[in-house]
Image (cartoon, rainbow, N blue to C red):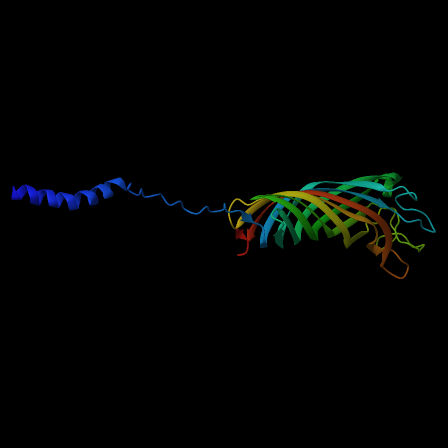
Length: 283
């Protein structure tokens, strides 16, 4: 009887506590989500150095200013067209870009290329020494430019346009002229006066013009990108002096010089690779 009383008393104290514990639902452990991380995008901001290679072709209109005596290879207002064949160009570039407003890129670049763009044409107007043709030659052996560019980027790809100033180094020659030399009556060439000696004046110049172009560039790694670009160069019309050092004179050998007017245009396609120098990366 006493044992039953003690058991009942213990149950009276433990029961409510146990019931209260059973009536409280257990707390589930909620998973903790990791914070969202924004995707990384390539940044075009920074400077770069690189190399390029491609092909160029051009066109020159070569004419002779009106002389007081007579024309040597072209009538006034009738230029001789010299089409320059497709030739190799190759060199390097250096520049800097700045990306703004998420997708826009503005930059500046300088480049230099060695070139082998040449051509020749026969004079359609006059006959040369001993009845042979008069031949005009033109060669561009260097191109350079200082340009700005504006592009629109889709992460690692960018479409852009460029424009600025350009330079070209050119060489000219006229072969098999019967006479040469502006403003003089002693136009023969040679150490004496043989009828078979032609005049072959040559000249060279560095000329200033402008260039525009379009291109696409792709960053295939954080520090490396490749580009494909088309450029148009226009150098207008300039006067160039060409000289034959073997002019004949009763007093001895003299140089015979005269001006020619040259209108020049060049087009080029290039593929290049750039290495970005420490700046830029991802954002």
